[in-house]
Amino acid sequence: MLASFDTHLFWEVLRSEPYWRGALLAVALTCASIAAAFLIGFPLALGRASRQPAVRIVVFLYSWFFRATPTLLLLLIVWDVIPQQFSVFTHNWFTPFLAAFIALSLNEAAYMAEIIRAGLLAVDPGQELAGRALGMKRWQILRRVVIPQAVRIVIPPTGNEFITLLKLTSLASVISVHELLTAANEQASVSFSYREVYGAALVYYLVIVSVLMFLQSRLERRFTFRSRGVGRAPVGLAAAAHDAR
Amino acid sequence: MSDTVLRADGVHKAYNGLQVLQGVSLEVGRGEVKVIIGPSGSGKSTLLRCLALLEPIDGGAVALEDHVLSGLRERELAAHRSEIGMVFQRFNLFQNMTALGNVMVGLRDVRRLPKKEARERALEFLSRVGLADKADSYPEELSGGQQQRVAIARALVMRPKAMLFDEPTSALDVELVREVLDVMEGLARDGMTMVVVSHELRFAHHVASSILMMDEGRVIEEAPPEQFFSSPTHERTKRFLALVE
Image (tube, rainbow over the protein chains, first blue to last red):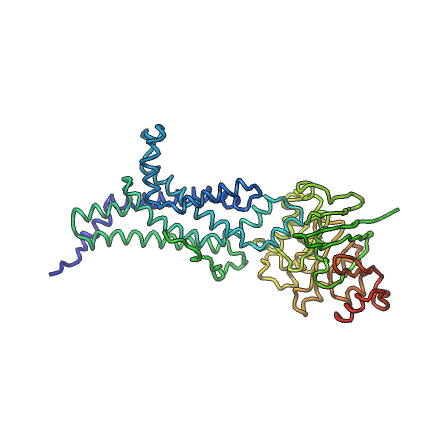
């Protein structure tokens, strides 16, 4: 005989501290890692087109290494191997959250670099030419003309990366980061009420991704250059070339 | 007294071993309008880009008002480029800026004018090309003819010593060609020094001080319009004119 859905338990779990703390942690880890990945990925993207062969090789090796290494393995390396090698990492400040942040950022930067590079390349070269003809310097052209236009192209795939990364944060449970899915698992092993417990976790993910989608469409409109603010069709790079991990 | 604004002396240019310009010489006096015609691949656009200091040259010299500029480094070139206005076949307006923003950006970033002054001057030049009412429109909201007129205003607002036009009407629908040619004729009447690559022969006839025929990387003939059209000396010119008309 099937037990009926325990609404009371569902609500209780949904509002429980481990859940909202875990969700907050997952969102914080994702936001921080995406932001850091952007900062690392941008110079990597520029380095891909560098005139210095050494720079291009470093960028290639970075992208090769971090795309080839499974995220889970990278988490374990950062958390377990690095402190063995360098004693500074054995101190208290090196928390599981920090380790997860480092591993996820380094990993994600390899993907963000590709996305940013594609965004920069998608801007019509005529734009740079016109800037040069006006007498603008390279960095002025980059800042005023190329980057604003590349942002619009980069937003949809970055949204995809955000969602992927949000789900990847659950891997950090192996280094004892208590994010949302870890909380759900623990709850499930206590109560055996899988439907209520996992259902509540699902609700969190749905809400987080919905908020992200809303913010993304706002941002896309902001970087669509029309006076009446009517969004045009997305550029179509959204789901393209999205690596499965 | 020589009053040469722009001069090319035996300019050579090769791309990947392909000789595109093979010793082109050209002298443009103040207030002169030179129209360059020739088959595709004859080097017209390349010559214009070299005159605009957008391409390094392999031999010869480019001089602006008796200062040889072709040997300068990229950093020094930027400032000089702003003294030569360039108008492109495909307009190349900055897509992320309004019409006003496009005309202002050179004044702000290159001339370092304060915002208010830049804005006033940009508006003045937009009205000169008849587009004051489109100041707040983005390029993709404008017709091709309007975009090209904004592009002309963007170059003109820098008060260049010469204006270069690279097939300015060949990307336009026929009914939009006139409005762009009208603006260019007005400029010529006002004494602007111009080099125009164009196959608008009627425009050339009315406006040009002389017409140059290019073929295989060389100027093979130069003559005032009457003479050029009535009695071309070169066999290649005769054949080309027969094809274009």
